[in-house]
Amino acid sequence: MTSIAFRAKRPMNYEIFRPVHRRLLEDPRMSIVLYGKQQGRSDSSLFDRVGALPARRRPNWMAKFSSPDVLFSADWLLATRRARATIQMFHGISGKGHNMNKRVLDYDHVFVIGPWLERRLIERGFFQAGDPRLLPVGMPKTDRLTDGSLDRAATLRAFGLDPDVPTVLYAPTWGPESSLEEMGHQVLSVLAGIDANVIVKLHDNSYDPRYAQADWSAALDGVRRPGLVTPAVSDVIPLMHAADLLVTDFSSVAFEWLHLDRPSILLTFPDQLKHRADRADVTTWRDKMARACDDVRALPELIATGLDRPDEFADVRRAALHDVYYNPGNATDAAIEQTYSILGIGAPAAAATA
Image 1 (cartoon, rainbow, N blue to C red):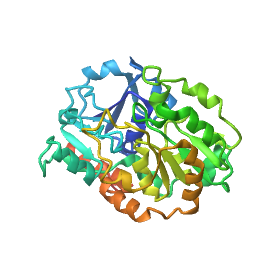
Image 2: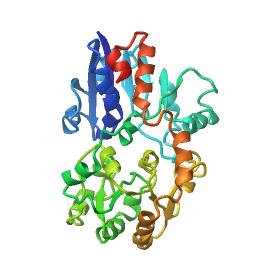
Image 3: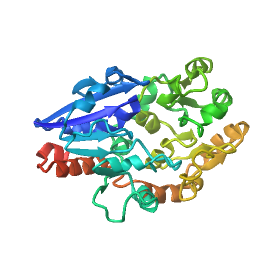
């Protein structure tokens, strides 16, 4: 048997791996183990909460004693140094520079999200151009945005929303760059008052008391209304697919949204990137692909304009998509091809062509 390991310290980490996991399950030669950690504690129960696909589930502390053939990771900590091969998948790309971390060098192979990230890793001196560790994969998580597997109307109805009403998704990042932490109560109040469906999807860390500056669960309880929902889900992809307009900030969702070629609004505030000024890149794409909002009071008008003129910024969005992502819509295929190449074995017909 070929052993595959994956470590997650928050639910969203597993969603990065899920498409690859699904495809590896088609190969009876694969034995998959999921190592879990949440809110600083070794705990595999997060895989139960996210409905992880079949695999052995173990607490994080056991990972360092394992010797898998391949270890996948979507965060920086290398769970074990005994793996025959290690793969960094990244948990997203946002422009704020979280990918510019020297721990990327701990990994044998890097599933690069796209040309933009590859250029930045080279410019920062982590790799030389042509380094064989850099593999042009893309982001398997985003394939479902365009592969026809999702049903917008069904998703909205499942959350009690009317598919005939325009839908706005608010999905902020966490930490100092987060619109939620800077002005979240005001944003939620404004969104509660607009004439549209509203879906609020917070980052996993916004519910973690070690990181959040407020009790956001309680805050969401205070703004729910018919037509405004706050789904307790880890997977943002169906919510994105169902929405007509995105409101975000420096979340990686802002770039994943490019696959849908729909309007977005980026919330900004002074000194938003002061902690990352040496690593951030907002000029290549982020500041060109959507309207910025630095005054929450203007948000309803900007939303109305975006819904009325969805093709604004479309040319930039389409150009950005193919620079930010390798293999848009087919990244899982690329990830599977590279994984079997790393393993040095042939993929079964089902896994190779699914």
